[in-house]
Amino acid sequence: MISRNWSRMAISLCLTVAILSTFSMVALAAQGQSGASGELSVVGEVSVNGTNAISGATVFSDSTVTTAKGSSAVVSFGKLGRVEVLPDSSLKLSFTNNSITGMLEAGRVRYSTSAGTAASVITKDGSAVADNSQPNVFTVNVECGNTEVATQSGRVELRAGSAIKQIAAGNQDTAGTAQPGSRCTRLTRETNFGSLSGGALAALLLAAGGAIAAAIIAARQDNDFNIAGNPVVFSPVR
Image 1: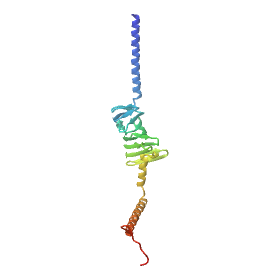
Image 2: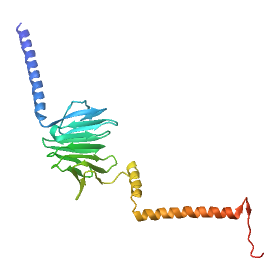
Image 3: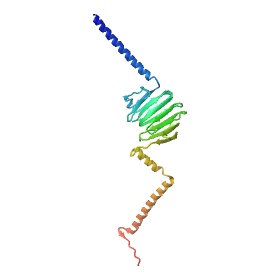
Image 4: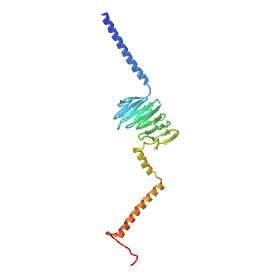
C-alpha cells in the first residue's frame, strides 16, 4: 500500500515538473520575441525561415522570407510601412520600432515607408538607403547579378564602396556588373545601341541610305544594258 502511494506521488511530481518546464519554455520564447513584429500576407507558396507560411502569421526580426516562382509576400509594419517580397526572391528582414533593414539574397523587393522610418536594403554590391525625412517607395532588384535601384517616390542613395549615387523619384541606377550572357546583358547591349548620339545615328542612317541607293542604281543599269537576256555592245566605230 505504501509502495503504491509512493509511486503515485512520484508520477504526480514528474508531471508537475514537466508542466512547469513547458510553461517556462513558452514564456522564454515569448520574451525573446517581444520586440517589433510584422504581419504577413501571402500569395502562393511562401516560407519564413524555411517553414511554409500563411496570411496572418507574425514575422519577427531576423526572419528570412522566401517566395517561390509566381508567389509573393507582404510584411506590414503598421505606421513604419511595408515590404513586398516579389516572386522568386529571398529577403532577410531585421527591424526595430523605427527602422527596417533587409538583406536581399535573390530576386526583387519593394519598400513603401513613411517619413521617420530608417529603411535600407543590403546586397552584395552595396546598399540602398532611403531618405527618412520623407515617405519613400523604391525597388531593389538583384535578378541580373548586379544591383538595380529604382525610386518611385522620395529619394534613395545607392552606396557602393566609396561611390554614392542619389536616385530621385522616377529614376534608377545600378551597382556591380550583370552576369555575362544573361538576358540582362543582352538588354543592355540593345539599350546601348538605342543610346547612340544624334550625330552617330545620323551618320549610320546616311551610310545605310547610300548603300541602298547604290544598289538600286546598279540594278537599273543592269536592266538597261541587259534586255531580255541580250547584251547591248557599243562600238567606237560606226
